[in-house]
Length: 88
Image (tube, rainbow, N blue to C red; front, top):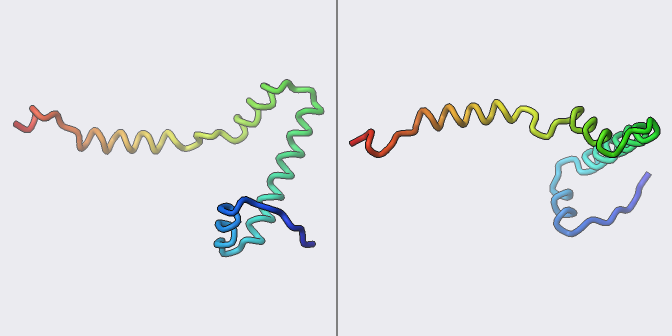
């Protein structure tokens, strides 16, 4: 099936540059519809707005894996850091 969707120019250009734009859009829409369905299930179960929000964050934490990156940056910083008077 073919459906016409209007995007802002900058987004349209980025989509056109993708190697498999059709596959990308199909996957994106499929995921969005599944998320919408699961949010609808939460609403039917009667959870409050904040309960649904916290559940969504629990399932997909926005900073997942960031701790490893921060620790690695800290190690690099400590390894290269020196006060000016240390080298005099």
